[in-house]
Image (cartoon, rainbow, N blue to C red):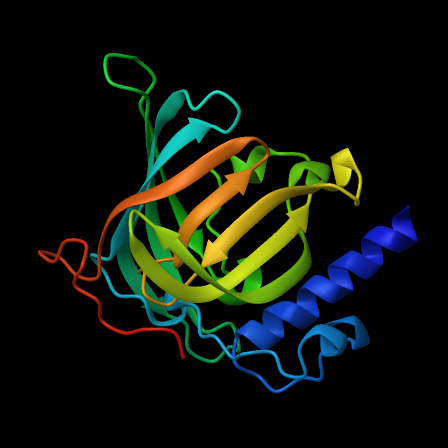
Length: 213
């Protein structure tokens, strides 16, 4: 089991490098499906203060609303003299369904180089390692949300605590949405659906700064 998890982690690192725009050779199983991995530069790489995105959360089986989760870039921090690139101070807010108590808010310092480009769940740093996603597969995809079409990637991950055969985290990622670029996510039975975003302060959803690279 340890060897298998180590292999998944190594595969995840290779795919993260590919998505960051660096030239690497894809594994043989990826070459068989696609001779070339499309290059994608995650929006978080050069995010700016004021960019934000909000998701509606619901139970995948019942459709019952669970609440709303938002990410807002407060500021970008240049780290000089290191190879870690920029860090971002991000505000995460969870709001329960209307009329319910339980609003939560926290600040995190996020480094895309160290932490990857997926949005952290509210309490991810408190979760056991086995409950954090490990990348399994990636493919180019075109997907639709409320009649609008996006070009990007479908990324499937597993949660080691549940085994490595069942996909427990599915993400649809595009360069046309700010912050982490996630349009939709299905994480362990919970559906995230992007409902609003802004590239800069004062610009609501629809003000696109750029698309996929």
